[in-house]
Every structure is written in structure tokens, then in C-alpha cells.
Length: 285
Image (cartoon, rainbow, N blue to C red; front, side):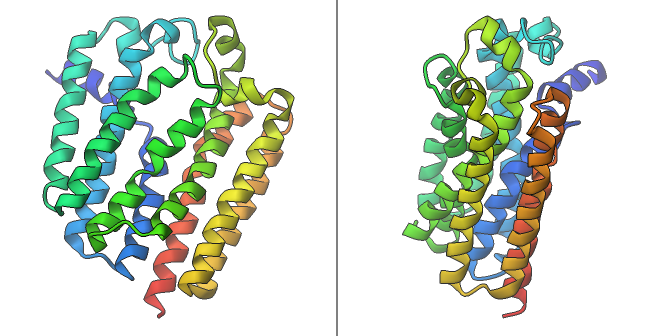
């Protein structure tokens, strides 16, 4: 069992927390906004653990769906499912258990949030297959990785106002930015095996597309902050995030795969800056 446990932890990328942190910070920022400040320990626990569990379940689904592709990509060829160390049936069993645990958590909220969790699950399951036919699968991933935002509003307010969808759209551009950086790492392999990514679709406009996406994300959340009256702490958080985005331009401008991967991995700090600004803004009200 310890050996199987190690394989399962590798399957869900437990040693690479950047993935679930990318989901967590905008979700918690939305939870603070929806609650008008600290949301209470129950909602904080539900959304923190739920985010970790659902991202982990998503990894298992992604690896099973992409098994034939991952064998031809150097970075993914040694993943547990791809290498055969974990069977597809076992991986799906682990993913189902994690998704059920997340569903158990959302049941502690309300009917609206529970209903939205079904949509979130279907969106997550469909994502791996969008790489077969969608020119910008990273934009679809933006919906999947941002769906915690309307769920946070649903849990805190028992409604999903226009502000929630505005924040979701803004966050979608952030996901498009950092996942395009990620796609730039594997572009050579992806071209060989014939899958679609934003890095391939944007071509030589990839760096410009990443930076425009960052700008749209920051501008939309800044506009939300002005409307909500969050003041200078929130703006300082966004300024810090913008400085990080500018650093990412330095990293990715020459399209070096190692530097692109570094930019991708550090995006969770950008999200943390936004979350910290949100928390401080409400604390000082």
C-alpha cells in the first residue's frame, strides 16, 4: 500500500502544488468578495479542500484521456498512467473517490452551490477532449479553472450576480495567459502528435497574446475593485501582480521552454498577490 500510495500521490501531482494553488487563490478572492470579508471557517474549509480534491481528480481524468498523447511528450511520458504503473481503471477509481469527497463537502453549503458543482464536474471531464478539436483549449480550461468563482457566490449569497460572471471572465484571461506559457513548453511535441493548443494557434503572436491576456485579467479585476470600493490594498495587490506579469514577459519573450515553464510555475504568486490585496482591503474596511 505505501508503494501504491506513492503512485497515487504522483498521479494527482501532490508534489506540484502550483496547479491547485492556481485554482485556489481566485476562488478564495471571490469567496471574500461574495461574503464581504471573512467568509467563516466552514466555507473557507469547504472551498479550500474542495479545490484541492477537484484539481486532483481532474489530473486523473486528464491522464486517462491523454494517455496516447502523453507517451509522445517528453515531459509527460513517465506519468503513472502513461508508463503503465497505474491502470486506467485504477486511476479512474482514485479520481471518482476524490470527486465524491469534494461533492460531500459542497453538500455542506446550499442547493444552488450543489447544483453548480454538477456543471463544474462536467466541464472538468470534457476539458481533456477539447484539445482534439478546439483551437484554444486553454480558453475552455479558463472556464473550468474559474468555476469556483460563481460557486463561491452561490455558497455565500445563495445567488450568482453579474459580478461573479465578470470575475470569471477576467480570470479566464489569466488562465489563458499562464496555460499558453505552459503550452509553449511542449509546442514541438504537440505539433508532432497533432493536438491543438493556444501556443500553436497563436504562433508567433504567442508572447503578445499572453501579455494581452494578463492585461485584460488585471483590468477586469481592477474595474471590479473600483465598483466594490476595495481601495488601495486591492490596487496594491493588482500592481504586484502586474509587476510579476511584466517579469514573465522577460522570461517568455525568447520562447525558451525552460523559462516558459518557470513563468507558468510562478503564476500562483500572482494569484496570491490578488488574494492578499482582497483580504487586506476587507480587513481595513
